[in-house]
Image (tube, rainbow, N blue to C red; front, side, top):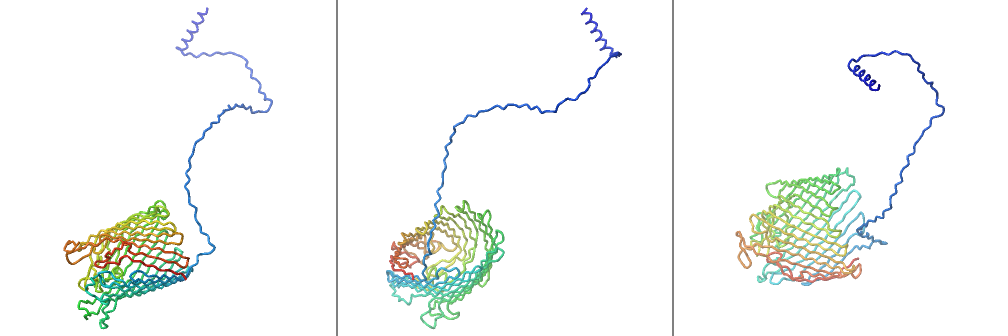
Length: 570
């Protein structure tokens, strides 16, 4: 029976799938729908609280070792005083040395003042000694100076006046000729003055400027014969110097405008002097230059740049010439001024004057030809800085092309060989220089400077009487404010003199006879004892090595000297 039912259902399913026939059934019935009702009560929030598991963290004992290096900063020393140290108006220094060498100096200055500065000084030094195997070698130098300045909030006005008188002898010749003092004597007189006015307004919107006027008269000794009193060197120098500066942002715009005139005269044109070899000279030398520059700073004043040009009109010759020199310089401060590299290019024209040449070599003949030194181009660079608050240094080099570079040679035409003349040449000059200084407050100071020069000339074998190597050492020490020690040492090597014939230690190169001059080592030492703030005594030792070296050919210096004296403050 069960099997029969299953067969019937299977047959019906097959028929439905094949025929897809619709079947409609009709029937009757009753369906009841439940009635709606309101739930009694108010709605409530049923919140399920989920418990949070408690986590325990064990306390770990961790300890790390740390090291801290603290740099020691020296405390600032402040000197507190009830009142400032007393200043004295007058300072007097009197002394005498070997070879009967009197010394006298007097200074008079204003004490503390914000507005007025003024003073005067008088100096004298002379020697009555001689140098063995040389003509009379006495000399004297007297100098007088006067200055004054008015300082105001917006301007400064001041001036200077000086008079120098220098007597000497052309002693660079053997004394076997029996020359008298008057025949080898020379005397230079130097009188000059200058005034200036400078504004210094603090507002950057204003133009600050400086104007100065300079005058100088320089001359040599008058001849013994009154009829030939014009046959001496007479030089008048006059200059107007101006400068203006304007600050706009980080740039400083500046310009210099200068007029310099130098008139030199020796003798009278068309008239013969007392000596048939005398040649009259009249030379008017005028230089006008205009130099605008722009200076800027960047990166908190660490970087500094300067650029400009220098336009120079040279009227020293019959043909007026114009020169244009570049001006460019770059500096960069690194590590808070510890290291400052710099590089630049420049040039310039140096006016030749009889005063300037005789200041370098006082044994010149007055019939020299003066030329303006034309430094066409000069490259320079190096670095400077500070190694500590007490040590500073500078290392640099420069390469320049110089036209009309003056060199001193022995004069055998206008003298007996005891005077010097000057010749000019074009040279390429390379210089390497280094310096270092150390200062421990006012107790100890030390400086060392070294320079090496290399010359390449067109018409001369050597740069006559110019050294290749220079070394300068200077030091001072203050012991208990009672003893003051000073030491300086000057050394030079590589100087050669042009001579006019063969001889001992004389070489012949390029048609010129050259004599190598000895090494110079000039050491000087002095000590001062302060008895009290107003009285002291001093002793000075000059040329300790007692070298009778030749500063100029056939003109040796005096040997070891001792100079002592006292000082007063009033």
